[in-house]
Image 1 (cartoon, rainbow, N blue to C red):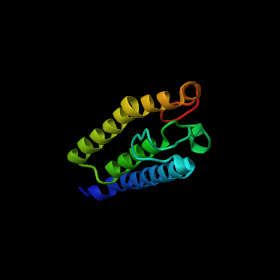
Image 2: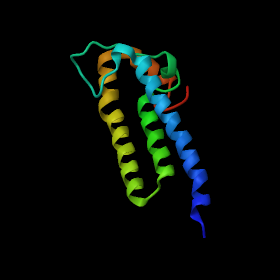
Image 3: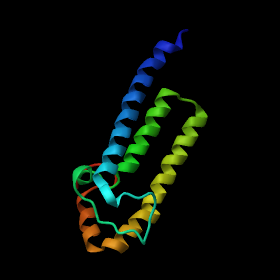
Length: 126
């Protein structure tokens, strides 16, 4: 049985999803401008960015990462890659929930709470 023909649609979907994820990530970084940072820094001056892609996702960079992981998983599926992808996506989620959202609430207070009420964590408006 030739499995190559069976896997090709998954690889094509994976490539499309991965490219979409990379586009979402780059768009989120460009939209953040000078407020972009890796991790949380209480000393860097930052502003709450709510325009552009941040109108439909509070965490588009992490959404982009997740889409890239899913795309790679579809293109090159194996059990170890599945474990690594799920682990990475879980760690990013915990970083958002336990560190970044607390920082944003502490830094921006009511402005962040109002934004949080309007826009979902990963995708969609409320």
